Image 1 (tube, helix red, strand yellow):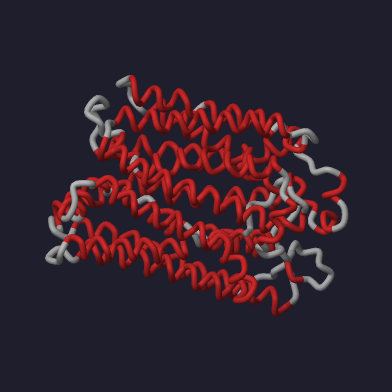
Image 2 (image 1 turned 120 degrees about the vertical axis):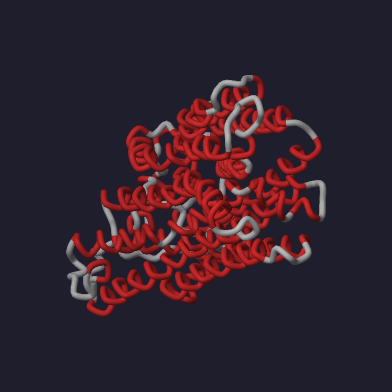
Length: 462
Protein backbone atom coordinates (compact mmCIF):
# COMPACT_ATOMS: atom_id res chain seq x y z
CA UNK A 1 0.00 0.00 0.00
CA UNK A 2 2.92 2.31 0.68
CA UNK A 3 3.59 2.44 -3.07
CA UNK A 4 0.29 4.20 -3.75
CA UNK A 5 0.49 7.92 -4.41
CA UNK A 6 -1.22 9.68 -1.46
CA UNK A 7 -2.45 12.37 -3.86
CA UNK A 8 -4.54 9.94 -5.89
CA UNK A 9 -8.18 8.93 -5.34
CA UNK A 10 -7.07 5.28 -5.24
CA UNK A 11 -5.02 5.98 -2.11
CA UNK A 12 -7.85 7.85 -0.41
CA UNK A 13 -10.48 5.24 -1.17
CA UNK A 14 -8.23 2.40 -0.08
CA UNK A 15 -7.72 4.27 3.17
CA UNK A 16 -11.49 4.81 3.41
CA UNK A 17 -12.13 1.05 3.17
CA UNK A 18 -9.69 0.41 6.03
CA UNK A 19 -11.21 3.24 8.05
CA UNK A 20 -14.69 1.79 7.57
CA UNK A 21 -13.52 -1.63 8.80
CA UNK A 22 -12.12 0.00 11.95
CA UNK A 23 -15.51 -0.07 13.70
CA UNK A 24 -17.24 -3.03 12.06
CA UNK A 25 -16.25 -5.41 14.87
CA UNK A 26 -17.10 -3.04 17.72
CA UNK A 27 -20.57 -2.36 16.31
CA UNK A 28 -21.07 -6.09 15.86
CA UNK A 29 -20.15 -6.72 19.51
CA UNK A 30 -22.09 -3.83 20.99
CA UNK A 31 -25.54 -5.41 20.61
CA UNK A 32 -24.53 -9.06 20.96
CA UNK A 33 -26.15 -9.18 24.43
CA UNK A 34 -29.45 -8.07 22.85
CA UNK A 35 -29.50 -11.18 20.66
CA UNK A 36 -28.36 -13.49 23.45
CA UNK A 37 -30.40 -11.85 26.18
CA UNK A 38 -32.49 -14.84 27.23
CA UNK A 39 -29.47 -17.15 27.27
CA UNK A 40 -27.47 -14.68 29.38
CA UNK A 41 -30.36 -14.37 31.83
CA UNK A 42 -30.96 -18.11 32.07
CA UNK A 43 -27.34 -19.23 32.28
CA UNK A 44 -25.76 -16.41 34.31
CA UNK A 45 -28.03 -13.81 35.90
CA UNK A 46 -30.86 -16.03 37.14
CA UNK A 47 -28.30 -17.94 39.24
CA UNK A 48 -28.02 -15.13 41.80
CA UNK A 49 -31.08 -12.84 41.45
CA UNK A 50 -34.69 -12.70 40.37
CA UNK A 51 -34.27 -9.18 38.94
CA UNK A 52 -32.81 -10.57 35.71
CA UNK A 53 -33.89 -7.66 33.49
CA UNK A 54 -32.38 -5.05 35.78
CA UNK A 55 -29.02 -6.81 35.98
CA UNK A 56 -29.05 -7.51 32.24
CA UNK A 57 -29.52 -3.80 31.48
CA UNK A 58 -26.54 -2.97 33.68
CA UNK A 59 -24.39 -4.26 30.81
CA UNK A 60 -25.67 -1.37 28.69
CA UNK A 61 -25.60 1.08 31.58
CA UNK A 62 -21.87 0.61 32.18
CA UNK A 63 -21.14 0.99 28.46
CA UNK A 64 -23.16 4.23 28.26
CA UNK A 65 -21.58 5.80 31.31
CA UNK A 66 -18.08 4.83 30.18
CA UNK A 67 -18.84 6.69 26.96
CA UNK A 68 -20.17 9.63 28.98
CA UNK A 69 -16.76 10.02 30.63
CA UNK A 70 -14.67 9.09 27.61
CA UNK A 71 -16.47 11.58 25.37
CA UNK A 72 -14.90 14.32 27.52
CA UNK A 73 -11.49 12.64 27.85
CA UNK A 74 -10.93 10.99 24.46
CA UNK A 75 -10.32 14.27 22.62
CA UNK A 76 -7.52 15.16 25.03
CA UNK A 77 -6.07 11.65 24.69
CA UNK A 78 -6.07 11.91 20.90
CA UNK A 79 -4.39 15.33 21.09
CA UNK A 80 -1.62 14.01 23.35
CA UNK A 81 -1.09 10.51 21.96
CA UNK A 82 -1.86 11.21 18.31
CA UNK A 83 -4.30 9.41 16.04
CA UNK A 84 -2.22 6.26 15.57
CA UNK A 85 -1.49 5.47 19.23
CA UNK A 86 -5.02 6.40 20.26
CA UNK A 87 -6.43 4.13 17.57
CA UNK A 88 -4.39 1.15 18.78
CA UNK A 89 -5.34 1.88 22.40
CA UNK A 90 -9.08 2.07 21.72
CA UNK A 91 -9.11 -0.99 19.45
CA UNK A 92 -7.22 -2.92 22.15
CA UNK A 93 -9.87 -1.92 24.70
CA UNK A 94 -12.54 -3.32 22.34
CA UNK A 95 -10.69 -6.61 21.82
CA UNK A 96 -9.84 -7.14 25.50
CA UNK A 97 -13.29 -6.08 26.69
CA UNK A 98 -15.16 -8.39 24.33
CA UNK A 99 -12.78 -11.25 25.18
CA UNK A 100 -13.27 -10.77 28.95
CA UNK A 101 -17.04 -10.70 28.41
CA UNK A 102 -16.82 -14.03 26.57
CA UNK A 103 -14.52 -15.41 29.30
CA UNK A 104 -17.15 -14.73 31.95
CA UNK A 105 -19.67 -16.71 29.94
CA UNK A 106 -17.17 -19.56 29.53
CA UNK A 107 -16.69 -20.16 33.28
CA UNK A 108 -19.70 -22.43 33.45
CA UNK A 109 -18.58 -24.18 36.66
CA UNK A 110 -17.97 -20.94 38.56
CA UNK A 111 -20.28 -19.01 40.84
CA UNK A 112 -22.91 -17.14 38.74
CA UNK A 113 -22.19 -13.88 40.54
CA UNK A 114 -18.47 -14.20 39.71
CA UNK A 115 -19.32 -14.87 36.07
CA UNK A 116 -21.53 -11.80 36.02
CA UNK A 117 -18.84 -9.61 37.59
CA UNK A 118 -16.31 -10.75 34.99
CA UNK A 119 -18.77 -10.05 32.17
CA UNK A 120 -19.59 -6.66 33.69
CA UNK A 121 -15.86 -5.84 33.83
CA UNK A 122 -15.52 -6.89 30.19
CA UNK A 123 -18.36 -4.59 29.21
CA UNK A 124 -16.67 -1.75 31.13
CA UNK A 125 -13.38 -2.27 29.28
CA UNK A 126 -15.25 -2.52 25.98
CA UNK A 127 -16.93 0.81 26.74
CA UNK A 128 -13.53 2.48 27.12
CA UNK A 129 -12.83 1.83 23.45
CA UNK A 130 -16.15 1.31 21.68
CA UNK A 131 -17.17 4.97 21.66
CA UNK A 132 -13.78 6.73 21.42
CA UNK A 133 -12.67 4.67 18.41
CA UNK A 134 -15.25 6.56 16.33
CA UNK A 135 -13.51 9.83 17.27
CA UNK A 136 -10.27 8.58 15.71
CA UNK A 137 -12.19 7.17 12.74
CA UNK A 138 -13.86 10.54 12.12
CA UNK A 139 -10.54 12.33 12.48
CA UNK A 140 -8.91 10.18 9.77
CA UNK A 141 -11.92 10.77 7.53
CA UNK A 142 -11.80 14.53 7.97
CA UNK A 143 -8.03 14.62 7.41
CA UNK A 144 -8.03 12.77 4.10
CA UNK A 145 -11.31 13.99 2.58
CA UNK A 146 -12.69 17.45 1.96
CA UNK A 147 -15.30 19.21 -0.11
CA UNK A 148 -18.17 17.11 -1.39
CA UNK A 149 -16.19 13.92 -0.69
CA UNK A 150 -16.30 14.53 3.06
CA UNK A 151 -20.04 13.96 3.48
CA UNK A 152 -19.76 10.87 1.29
CA UNK A 153 -16.86 9.50 3.35
CA UNK A 154 -18.69 10.05 6.64
CA UNK A 155 -21.74 8.36 5.15
CA UNK A 156 -19.65 5.34 4.17
CA UNK A 157 -18.11 4.94 7.64
CA UNK A 158 -21.54 5.17 9.27
CA UNK A 159 -23.05 2.71 6.78
CA UNK A 160 -20.34 0.06 7.23
CA UNK A 161 -20.56 0.44 11.01
CA UNK A 162 -24.29 -0.18 10.84
CA UNK A 163 -23.62 -3.22 8.64
CA UNK A 164 -21.88 -4.67 11.70
CA UNK A 165 -25.02 -4.09 13.78
CA UNK A 166 -27.31 -5.57 11.13
CA UNK A 167 -25.11 -8.64 10.63
CA UNK A 168 -25.08 -9.18 14.39
CA UNK A 169 -28.87 -9.10 14.69
CA UNK A 170 -29.32 -11.54 11.82
CA UNK A 171 -26.40 -13.93 12.42
CA UNK A 172 -25.88 -14.21 16.19
CA UNK A 173 -29.06 -16.22 17.02
CA UNK A 174 -28.22 -18.75 14.28
CA UNK A 175 -24.60 -18.99 15.45
CA UNK A 176 -25.73 -19.78 18.97
CA UNK A 177 -28.04 -22.54 17.73
CA UNK A 178 -25.24 -23.93 15.56
CA UNK A 179 -22.78 -24.12 18.45
CA UNK A 180 -25.44 -25.41 20.83
CA UNK A 181 -26.42 -28.29 18.51
CA UNK A 182 -22.99 -29.23 17.15
CA UNK A 183 -20.30 -28.15 19.61
CA UNK A 184 -21.37 -27.80 23.24
CA UNK A 185 -24.57 -26.94 25.04
CA UNK A 186 -22.65 -25.51 27.99
CA UNK A 187 -20.20 -23.41 26.02
CA UNK A 188 -22.41 -22.26 23.12
CA UNK A 189 -22.90 -18.83 24.70
CA UNK A 190 -19.18 -18.28 25.28
CA UNK A 191 -18.21 -19.44 21.78
CA UNK A 192 -20.80 -17.19 20.18
CA UNK A 193 -19.48 -14.20 22.14
CA UNK A 194 -15.93 -15.19 21.21
CA UNK A 195 -16.85 -14.84 17.53
CA UNK A 196 -17.58 -11.17 18.17
CA UNK A 197 -14.25 -10.78 19.95
CA UNK A 198 -12.53 -12.43 16.99
CA UNK A 199 -14.14 -9.95 14.59
CA UNK A 200 -12.74 -7.03 16.57
CA UNK A 201 -9.28 -8.44 15.82
CA UNK A 202 -9.88 -7.54 12.17
CA UNK A 203 -10.21 -3.95 13.37
CA UNK A 204 -6.65 -4.21 14.68
CA UNK A 205 -5.45 -5.43 11.26
CA UNK A 206 -7.30 -2.56 9.57
CA UNK A 207 -5.77 -0.15 12.10
CA UNK A 208 -2.26 -1.36 11.28
CA UNK A 209 -2.58 -0.77 7.54
CA UNK A 210 -4.50 2.46 8.05
CA UNK A 211 -1.66 3.79 10.22
CA UNK A 212 0.91 2.73 7.62
CA UNK A 213 -0.89 4.63 4.88
CA UNK A 214 -1.38 7.73 7.00
CA UNK A 215 2.27 7.70 8.11
CA UNK A 216 3.42 7.34 4.52
CA UNK A 217 1.39 10.38 3.50
CA UNK A 218 2.93 12.34 6.38
CA UNK A 219 6.48 11.23 5.62
CA UNK A 220 6.20 12.14 1.96
CA UNK A 221 4.19 15.35 2.68
CA UNK A 222 1.65 14.36 0.07
CA UNK A 223 -2.13 14.10 -0.08
CA UNK A 224 -3.72 15.46 3.10
CA UNK A 225 -0.31 16.53 4.41
CA UNK A 226 0.78 18.77 1.54
CA UNK A 227 2.70 21.80 2.82
CA UNK A 228 0.23 24.20 1.15
CA UNK A 229 -2.53 22.90 3.47
CA UNK A 230 -4.87 22.10 0.59
CA UNK A 231 -5.17 18.40 1.29
CA UNK A 232 -7.98 18.60 3.80
CA UNK A 233 -6.00 18.16 7.01
CA UNK A 234 -7.22 20.23 9.94
CA UNK A 235 -7.01 20.48 13.68
CA UNK A 236 -9.95 20.59 16.03
CA UNK A 237 -10.07 22.28 19.42
CA UNK A 238 -10.18 19.84 22.31
CA UNK A 239 -12.90 19.79 24.94
CA UNK A 240 -12.72 22.74 27.34
CA UNK A 241 -15.49 22.97 29.92
CA UNK A 242 -15.02 26.72 30.28
CA UNK A 243 -16.58 27.07 26.82
CA UNK A 244 -20.02 26.08 28.12
CA UNK A 245 -20.71 29.66 29.23
CA UNK A 246 -20.89 30.60 25.55
CA UNK A 247 -23.65 28.11 24.73
CA UNK A 248 -27.13 29.58 24.11
CA UNK A 249 -30.33 28.21 25.62
CA UNK A 250 -31.25 26.64 22.28
CA UNK A 251 -28.11 24.48 22.44
CA UNK A 252 -29.09 23.08 25.85
CA UNK A 253 -32.61 22.27 24.68
CA UNK A 254 -31.07 20.56 21.63
CA UNK A 255 -28.74 18.53 23.90
CA UNK A 256 -31.72 17.45 26.02
CA UNK A 257 -33.67 16.53 22.88
CA UNK A 258 -30.78 14.39 21.63
CA UNK A 259 -30.51 12.71 25.04
CA UNK A 260 -34.23 11.92 25.22
CA UNK A 261 -34.43 10.65 21.66
CA UNK A 262 -31.43 8.33 21.93
CA UNK A 263 -32.74 7.20 25.33
CA UNK A 264 -35.67 5.83 23.35
CA UNK A 265 -33.64 4.15 20.61
CA UNK A 266 -30.72 2.49 22.38
CA UNK A 267 -32.45 1.18 25.54
CA UNK A 268 -35.22 -0.19 23.35
CA UNK A 269 -32.72 -1.86 21.00
CA UNK A 270 -30.88 -3.36 23.99
CA UNK A 271 -34.03 -5.37 24.81
CA UNK A 272 -35.61 -5.37 21.36
CA UNK A 273 -35.24 -9.06 20.54
CA UNK A 274 -36.95 -10.15 23.77
CA UNK A 275 -39.57 -7.40 23.44
CA UNK A 276 -40.56 -8.75 20.03
CA UNK A 277 -40.78 -12.31 21.37
CA UNK A 278 -43.87 -11.44 23.39
CA UNK A 279 -46.46 -14.19 23.02
CA UNK A 280 -48.90 -11.96 21.16
CA UNK A 281 -46.45 -11.48 18.28
CA UNK A 282 -45.73 -15.19 17.87
CA UNK A 283 -42.09 -14.73 16.82
CA UNK A 284 -39.08 -16.92 17.55
CA UNK A 285 -35.67 -15.48 18.38
CA UNK A 286 -34.45 -15.34 14.76
CA UNK A 287 -37.59 -13.64 13.45
CA UNK A 288 -37.54 -11.16 16.33
CA UNK A 289 -33.85 -10.33 15.77
CA UNK A 290 -34.45 -9.78 12.06
CA UNK A 291 -37.26 -7.33 12.75
CA UNK A 292 -35.16 -5.51 15.34
CA UNK A 293 -32.32 -5.23 12.82
CA UNK A 294 -34.58 -3.22 10.50
CA UNK A 295 -34.02 -0.15 12.68
CA UNK A 296 -30.29 -0.19 11.94
CA UNK A 297 -30.86 -1.39 8.39
CA UNK A 298 -32.88 1.74 7.64
CA UNK A 299 -30.08 3.87 9.05
CA UNK A 300 -27.50 1.94 7.03
CA UNK A 301 -29.32 2.52 3.75
CA UNK A 302 -30.81 5.99 4.22
CA UNK A 303 -28.26 7.95 6.27
CA UNK A 304 -25.72 8.76 3.51
CA UNK A 305 -28.44 10.35 1.39
CA UNK A 306 -30.60 11.84 4.12
CA UNK A 307 -27.73 13.84 5.62
CA UNK A 308 -27.03 15.55 2.30
CA UNK A 309 -30.76 16.23 1.83
CA UNK A 310 -31.05 17.89 5.24
CA UNK A 311 -27.92 19.97 4.52
CA UNK A 312 -29.56 21.15 1.32
CA UNK A 313 -33.08 21.85 2.52
CA UNK A 314 -32.42 23.10 6.07
CA UNK A 315 -35.56 23.26 8.27
CA UNK A 316 -33.96 21.00 10.83
CA UNK A 317 -36.54 21.73 13.52
CA UNK A 318 -39.40 20.73 11.22
CA UNK A 319 -37.58 17.55 10.21
CA UNK A 320 -36.78 16.72 13.83
CA UNK A 321 -40.45 17.22 14.71
CA UNK A 322 -41.40 14.71 12.01
CA UNK A 323 -38.78 12.21 13.18
CA UNK A 324 -39.63 12.40 16.88
CA UNK A 325 -43.38 12.24 16.17
CA UNK A 326 -42.88 8.93 14.36
CA UNK A 327 -41.85 7.29 17.63
CA UNK A 328 -45.35 7.75 19.09
CA UNK A 329 -47.29 5.33 16.84
CA UNK A 330 -44.42 2.82 17.11
CA UNK A 331 -44.92 2.20 20.82
CA UNK A 332 -48.70 2.47 20.67
CA UNK A 333 -48.69 -0.28 18.03
CA UNK A 334 -46.39 -2.48 20.10
CA UNK A 335 -48.35 -1.90 23.31
CA UNK A 336 -51.92 -2.17 22.10
CA UNK A 337 -51.90 -4.42 19.01
CA UNK A 338 -50.65 -7.81 17.94
CA UNK A 339 -49.76 -6.69 14.41
CA UNK A 340 -46.47 -7.95 12.99
CA UNK A 341 -43.89 -5.58 14.55
CA UNK A 342 -42.07 -5.30 11.23
CA UNK A 343 -44.09 -2.16 10.46
CA UNK A 344 -43.31 -0.57 13.83
CA UNK A 345 -39.60 -1.34 13.40
CA UNK A 346 -39.52 0.22 9.93
CA UNK A 347 -41.15 3.35 11.35
CA UNK A 348 -38.64 3.46 14.20
CA UNK A 349 -35.79 3.02 11.71
CA UNK A 350 -37.04 5.97 9.65
CA UNK A 351 -37.43 8.04 12.81
CA UNK A 352 -33.87 7.15 13.87
CA UNK A 353 -32.41 8.07 10.47
CA UNK A 354 -34.32 11.35 10.21
CA UNK A 355 -33.43 12.55 13.72
CA UNK A 356 -29.78 11.55 13.38
CA UNK A 357 -29.54 13.70 10.24
CA UNK A 358 -31.42 16.65 11.75
CA UNK A 359 -30.24 16.82 15.37
CA UNK A 360 -26.50 16.10 15.66
CA UNK A 361 -25.30 18.37 12.83
CA UNK A 362 -27.33 21.21 14.39
CA UNK A 363 -24.95 21.40 17.36
CA UNK A 364 -22.26 23.15 15.33
CA UNK A 365 -24.78 25.66 13.96
CA UNK A 366 -25.63 26.98 17.42
CA UNK A 367 -22.24 27.59 19.06
CA UNK A 368 -19.14 29.61 18.14
CA UNK A 369 -16.78 27.61 15.95
CA UNK A 370 -13.99 27.58 18.52
CA UNK A 371 -16.31 25.72 20.93
CA UNK A 372 -17.62 23.03 18.55
CA UNK A 373 -15.45 20.30 20.09
CA UNK A 374 -16.62 21.15 23.60
CA UNK A 375 -20.25 21.42 22.49
CA UNK A 376 -20.20 17.96 20.93
CA UNK A 377 -18.41 16.47 23.92
CA UNK A 378 -20.91 17.91 26.40
CA UNK A 379 -23.89 16.90 24.23
CA UNK A 380 -22.53 13.36 23.98
CA UNK A 381 -22.08 13.20 27.76
CA UNK A 382 -25.65 14.39 28.34
CA UNK A 383 -26.83 11.82 25.79
CA UNK A 384 -24.99 8.95 27.45
CA UNK A 385 -26.15 9.99 30.91
CA UNK A 386 -29.76 9.82 29.73
CA UNK A 387 -29.27 6.48 27.99
CA UNK A 388 -27.74 4.95 31.12
CA UNK A 389 -30.59 6.16 33.33
CA UNK A 390 -33.16 4.78 30.90
CA UNK A 391 -31.35 1.43 30.78
CA UNK A 392 -31.87 1.16 34.55
CA UNK A 393 -35.51 2.23 34.35
CA UNK A 394 -36.31 -0.20 31.52
CA UNK A 395 -34.77 -3.09 33.47
CA UNK A 396 -36.76 -2.13 36.57
CA UNK A 397 -40.03 -1.77 34.63
CA UNK A 398 -39.56 -5.14 32.98
CA UNK A 399 -38.95 -6.83 36.33
CA UNK A 400 -41.69 -5.07 38.28
CA UNK A 401 -44.38 -4.24 35.72
CA UNK A 402 -45.65 -5.40 32.32
CA UNK A 403 -44.68 -5.19 28.66
CA UNK A 404 -47.43 -2.63 28.04
CA UNK A 405 -46.16 -0.40 30.86
CA UNK A 406 -42.64 -0.50 29.44
CA UNK A 407 -43.91 0.45 25.97
CA UNK A 408 -45.88 3.34 27.47
CA UNK A 409 -42.69 4.50 29.18
CA UNK A 410 -41.06 4.74 25.75
CA UNK A 411 -44.19 6.48 24.46
CA UNK A 412 -43.92 9.09 27.25
CA UNK A 413 -40.28 9.71 26.30
CA UNK A 414 -41.44 10.25 22.72
CA UNK A 415 -43.98 12.83 23.93
CA UNK A 416 -41.25 14.58 25.90
CA UNK A 417 -39.00 14.59 22.84
CA UNK A 418 -41.72 16.16 20.67
CA UNK A 419 -42.25 18.82 23.36
CA UNK A 420 -38.55 19.77 23.44
CA UNK A 421 -38.47 20.01 19.64
CA UNK A 422 -41.40 22.45 19.80
CA UNK A 423 -39.47 24.43 22.42
CA UNK A 424 -36.49 24.47 20.06
CA UNK A 425 -38.74 25.93 17.37
CA UNK A 426 -39.76 28.75 19.72
CA UNK A 427 -36.16 29.46 20.77
CA UNK A 428 -34.78 29.49 17.21
CA UNK A 429 -35.12 33.28 16.95
CA UNK A 430 -32.24 33.63 14.49
CA UNK A 431 -33.54 30.80 12.30
CA UNK A 432 -30.18 29.03 12.43
CA UNK A 433 -31.76 25.58 12.55
CA UNK A 434 -34.47 26.55 10.09
CA UNK A 435 -32.01 27.87 7.50
CA UNK A 436 -29.18 25.50 8.41
CA UNK A 437 -26.73 28.39 8.49
CA UNK A 438 -24.63 30.19 11.08
CA UNK A 439 -24.98 33.86 11.83
CA UNK A 440 -22.41 36.33 10.52
CA UNK A 441 -20.61 36.57 13.84
CA UNK A 442 -19.92 32.86 14.08
CA UNK A 443 -18.88 32.42 10.46
CA UNK A 444 -16.13 34.99 10.60
CA UNK A 445 -12.57 34.38 11.74
CA UNK A 446 -12.15 30.73 12.50
CA UNK A 447 -15.11 29.87 10.32
CA UNK A 448 -13.13 30.82 7.27
CA UNK A 449 -10.56 28.18 8.17
CA UNK A 450 -13.13 25.44 8.32
CA UNK A 451 -16.17 26.30 6.17
CA UNK A 452 -17.36 22.69 6.06
CA UNK A 453 -18.45 22.99 9.66
CA UNK A 454 -20.93 25.68 8.65
CA UNK A 455 -22.48 23.27 6.18
CA UNK A 456 -23.12 20.70 8.86
CA UNK A 457 -21.06 18.11 7.00
CA UNK A 458 -18.66 17.12 9.77
CA UNK A 459 -19.61 14.57 12.39
CA UNK A 460 -18.92 15.16 16.06
CA UNK A 461 -15.14 14.70 16.21
CA UNK A 462 -14.89 15.12 19.96
